[in-house]
Image (cartoon, rainbow, N blue to C red; front, top):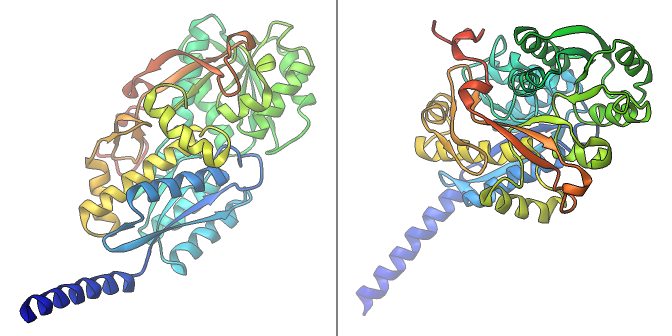
Length: 401
């Protein structure tokens, strides 16, 4: 009996020693740099932080004997602040991976900091194609959408349907400029014409002068190369001016289900838009979205769904690699296909672009909707190799040609 008891005590002591050793290990920290309070807050913001925390919880809360901590900070749509936050997270707080980053100018700034320090950064909310082209890095991942994909899916469908003359309202920063450029290329390549464009300040409240110029152009399509609150305000004011009733189509080149909810189906009905994800597509998307809505009280945007997917993919790679070393983890992230509710057969390429299917939706009429958030009907699924820029066209210096 004494031998049995001593064996039990020895085993218990060993287990407690292992537990104590695990507790001594520093936590694995991942940090979100988000728009928590301005025009992109609904798209990313607190919802992206929640998605990251859900991913960590579902993973088990720890990896390699280290507790996983999720940090978040508000960049206020200021590139210099985003860079300072990234610097502080990595240098002072011990963050191993940065997620989301919410807008293109802020993403480009934070990306340079992560690149200089050899840390993984995953972009879920920003769209500029520069992030996987000129600004690419060995540990940079562009996960959800980009300006090329948005332009290719929406612009191509519009021109093929006869909407072949365009005028752009463009947010005057990296994302808007790239979205206008990429959509212009698609329109012209497909046989359409661009009649003009006008640039507006980020987060503007009055679109009247810009909309009047677009209306006067007589273009069949007014392309909105903006996002978030700017897209919502532009569409609402276009309706007030009677632009849609006058026969011109307004095309949001990047819109989310939260934007359509803000606009309302009465005004938004018939809009064509490209999305990487929609909450009501299948049983998998509905199951995740139900859990998300219990916390956030609205369905996830594609950016927020992408945060959950990418954080999970990162943690799986850390576990498989047995280390948080960026090179080892990224190697596995690029070798391992992504198969979850967000993407099927997704793959991270040499240039950091995660390629996956994209979807073309039309906004439902009020009479077609079964209730709030039942906003889209699927028109087409665009395969990954058609939606995104071909790797051989990439301007990323890491791509071997």
